[in-house]
Amino acid sequence: MAFLPSIFSRVGRVARGQANQGVDALEDATFEATVKQTVADMRTELNNVVRSSAMAMSNYNSLDAEYQKYVRQSQEWKDRAGLALDAGNEDLARKALAKKSECDQQVTSMQQAVESARVTSEKLKQQVGELKRKIEEGERTATTLVARKNAAVAQRKVSEAMAGVGNADNAFAALNRFEQTVSKEEATAKAFDDLANTGKDEDLEAQFAQLSGHGVDSELEALKRERQLAAPAKPAPPPPYLPKELAAGSASVSTSQGIGDKAKA
Image (cartoon, rainbow, N blue to C red; front, side, top):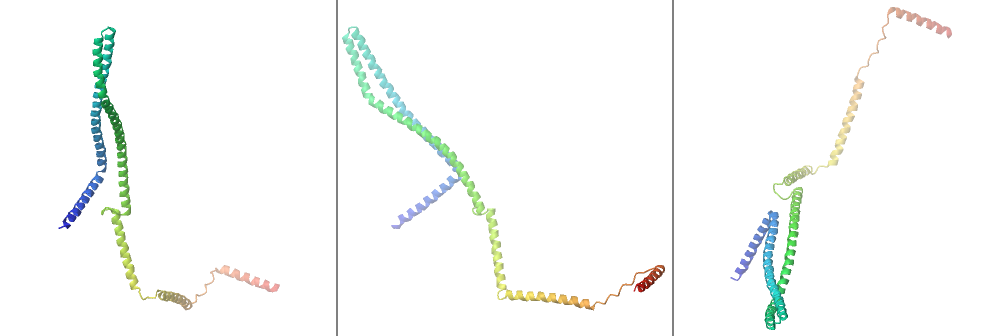
């Protein structure tokens, strides 16, 4: 049964992987809200730090106030001792200095605690200031991240649409599938056409087609010559019609011209 722990470990790893993947998908779907919530959590943490810092600073203020009180009382008893000496009352001056000594002991015992509280308070102030600046920077970064995320998502959708991938209902993808179907049909038709023409000598067929074309032209020319030879000769056109008067005048003119011509000869 030693394999059971290994099986449980693998199953647990798969379950954690699925859970992390689901959380990643949820964060991706609600990216802007998640980023804003992260900034809100930072502000909550800042408030907790501010409260803790305020308590530490309040403790310092209380210690410092108590310390300053004993410092003032020590100075007051010293002044009273001086007044007693001026009045010639050393016993009263001695009692005043005893009170001053008690105050000085309190100042000495509190001095280290007050200094430590002061250092802690100053450090907390500095850390709170740095945390505030980080949160302000985080808010600016969050706004930039949301804008970059939106731009990247838009660019990815455009690229997917242009590539015809992504959503199964993508119109570009459907058009590409149609084109692939048509190309496949065209390739199949060409394959069948190649098979149908297998064994035929296309050059020989072209040569015979050319010879056949020349035979038709020769027959056409022969038919034209045959029809020209078989056509009857056209009679000469009749002379133009002339009235009798014009005909006689022209005959006399022709006779006189003929006599003149003979005389010249």
